[in-house]
Length: 491
Image (cartoon, rainbow, N blue to C red; front, side, top):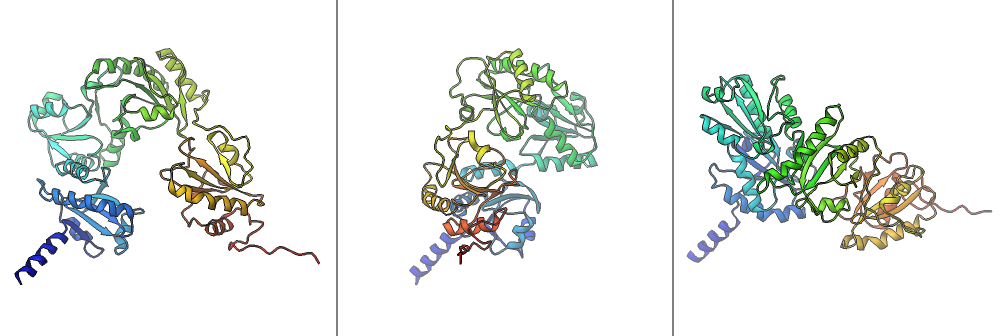
C-alpha cells in the first residue's frame, strides 16, 4: 500500500505544473490577482507551442520564487475562444504581458527558459524608479542609455499619474524615473516637468542633450514625443533597436564601439551628424544612424558589400519601400551630402541582389529573379501565383513536382502565370513578406500592390480550385468551382 501511495505521489508531483491554466470563465479574475503576469495563448496542435511548453514550464518554476514572484499562465484558444478573440490572438503561440489585470505589452523576448526568466525579471520591478536623493539621479543618468525623469512637486498630481501610465506602457523602450525631492529638482533645474536625457556617450554640439516635454499631459502625446526623440539626430543603431528606426534611413557602418573606443566612434558620428543637421534643417524627411559593421555583417552582405575593412564608414540607405542603396564613393562629408540628396531625389539606382535572368524561361513554371520580378509578377495583364522557396527546404522540394504539374495544367490559360523564386538568392520586393519556406502569394492583375498570401492545401487540385475561384476572369479551362470545362464538339 505504501508503495502505491508513493508512486501516486511521485506521478502527481511529476504532472504538477507551475503554469496557471486560465479559461474564459476565470481569465479576468485570475489575471487581476497579479501585479504582473505573462500569458501564453496557444493551441494544442501547434508545433511551436509544443516546443515552447517545456521551456515555459522551466521558466514558470523559476519565476515563482522570484522577488517579487512572476506567475506564468496559459490559455487554450481552442477551448477559450472568447478571451483569445478579445486580445486579438491570430497565431500561436502568442505571449502577452498583463499588469494589474490590464494588457500592458506584447512579449518581445526569447522563447527559451533562461531568456524568458531574464526578460520577465526586468519587468518585475517598478516601471519608473523613484529618485530620493541627488546621488540616485546621478546614478540613473550615468547609464549608457536614454533616460526619462519626471520632476514633480506632488507625486499624486495628474501629471505624475500620466507619467506613470506612460512608464507602464513604454518601460521596454526607455528607462523611466521620477522624483519629488526638492534637492534633485534644484540640482537639475526642473519642476513639474518631464525631461528626456541623452546618455553622455552621445552628447554632441549638434543637438540638445536634454529635451523638456511641452505639450498636453496625455499618455498618447508623451509616447509620441518620446518615440520622435529617442533616437536623436543620428542614433546608435543596434540589433536590439534596429526596427525602431524610421525610413528613409541612411546608415554609416564602421567600427562603432562605445565600450572600447567612444572617442573614435564619435569622431565619425559627428561628421555624419553635421551633414544630417544641415539636410534635416532644410525640412527634408530622412533619418540617420551609425551601426557596427561587425554586428551588422549580415546586413552588409545584403548590400553586396561583404567584409568591410578600413577606418572610414561605408554608407547604405533604405527608402520607404525598403529598397536598398549604396554610396559607392569613399566617405567624406561632401560625398555623404551629395549621396543623401541624390537618394532623396531618386537619382540613385537601387541595389538588387539578383540571380541572372534565365535565357530560356518557357517552362510551365516561370523562373523569377529580382531583375525580372516586375516583368513577370507585376504583369498588369496576368494573375500570378508565385512560390518563394529555398533550395535546401524539404517542403519546397516536395512541392516542386506538384507546382510543375499545376503549371502544365494551366499552360493554355492566357491570363494566369505560375511562378517561383529562390528567396535566398534574390531580394524580395515589398509588399511581399517571406519569413518561412515555401511562402506562396497570389497577385491578381488588378491588385499588384495587394497580393494575397496563400494558406490553402498544397495538392494540385487545391491550387486549381483556388485559382478557379480567385482568378480575375474565369479560367478558360476550369469553372469557378474548379471543375474542368467540357470541350465543345462540332456537329
